[in-house]
Length: 118
Length: 111
Image (cartoon, rainbow over all chains, first blue to last red; front, side):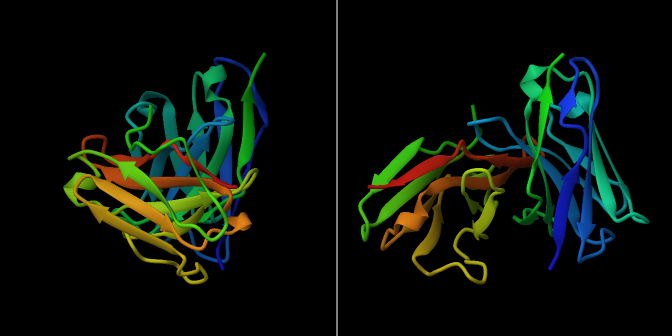
């Protein structure tokens, strides 16, 4: 059974770059699609972006100018960079897997809380 | 403001039936993209509950069902149990955004 685990700093200063990694176990990252989704405290889910094994990416238009996603097949993990963060980027960040097209997210990480504060 | 609209809260007594609506537009649900539903308990990740409008993953009881019509979808829960208390989210693909969109979430309270 596939497992996903987010890791990265829990505190980021305003204007800096938020960086998270999702390590995948139980399956190869060289298949499927991999997404980042975030959830501010007490609020709903927001899809950030998705990366495929070829490196092709799709980003949420509202975040596109600040988001970069990458993957490392040798380490079986993929990463998120979100630049120029503000307090509005404080949220729990989830990584998740889907099977492409308009498929659902069938596996999720437990989530990583990232706070933006000086 | 979410692209897909859900009621903020619904409630029902044990044993009753409740429905949660999810309203979209011609660029998502109305464009024939599938709707998926997730359940989220406090402090945990969302878990897939219904996929492809009306299909249940293995292990999800048949008390949960989904449907879709036009630009809307619904999640129905019958035989409400205390353990059904959670937040429920709908999700679909949006062609104008070229990405995935979620509803704002509905908090289910079992009275």
